[in-house]
Length: 98
Length: 371
Image 1 (cartoon, rainbow over the protein chains, first blue to last red):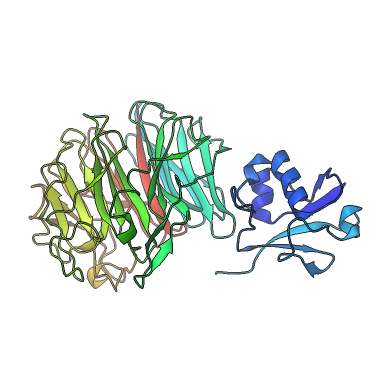
Image 2: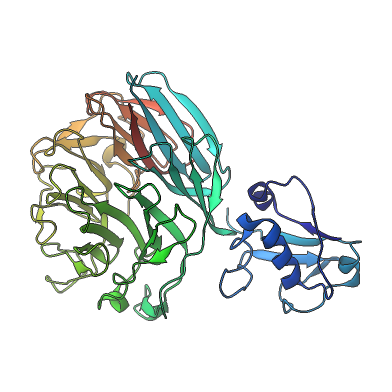
């Protein structure tokens, strides 16, 4: 199972209290995780990436295994620890604004 | 038993304030959608427990919410706003072309006859409509594709479509206003549009007959006389008696004619309310005195309403969508401030009292009259 961490506002929107676990077929990529996440929680559509372009929203970042993966291609395989469920794929609201 | 439900959108969530017809004892519900900006909430006039809300954030974009039980519970509905065709460009602040891009929904206007039909005014300026209760939204692109679109320019708050007025006597007629393009009217249900800005004069626009480019802040109408429109422009309070074909200034004796909201008494179509703000660079009331001004003559002669409002050291603003009136026999007036107060008057403005005093900055106020 893939583990996904969501920021507080999106956890509330999705109606979950902690990490989400998702079935994602290999190869495990950011796009595949987001597809599965949005299929399970339709209320998250459009809040992490654009509906049409599928591009990440500017103030959202992706982290895993202590690395910023935000600028990796969304079809790039994620670290093996994420694919095995040992480490979560973290969706983070950027620290910006006041 | 009659009562009122006040829908308050703030920078950090939504609040619902309810009272019986006396409007003395209030119940406060919220924050709903805590931490999100709620630009606007509005209920269907034909299904009062159906409320639509625009929820947004700079981080996570636009979310749309719908309630079918008067705001007790909510469900997310469609949040995909895609411009029709290739959206092209409008002018940026420096006059260069800038691609049209959706940012947020500023204003929701439910249909007067169908609870599943709602109009949405968005930034960058465009008009969308849903006919399925908010699940899907389609652009009425005749507005944006009006020939002047490439010349529209944002106001300081963004290029927002903030006002939508539906003519109760003619379902084909819709008025909208955009900062800083101006006012537009459709006479075919939103298919085609014409600018209605003749008579507006704006400092900084050298062409006195400019068709677009005016920073209209708000337009109001009384349902019994839909050809009479009142406008709070960036500067100037204006009036039209012919559905916006021409406008004339009715600022009269106001201490300043800069401001944001404008509204009309529910039962007196010549009684109009504004909240004068010092200037376009000082967004607070003159002399630190929060005063609503009322005209009972459709403009020009204005009286200050101060009873119960702070008359010293008050430096809040009242935003364009943050004033509303109820329809009880004794008309109630409501407005919210950027300081987090929501004031109410149950006697048409003669006396005021705060309903709440410490909310986040108030973006919008709507009122439902419940019978």
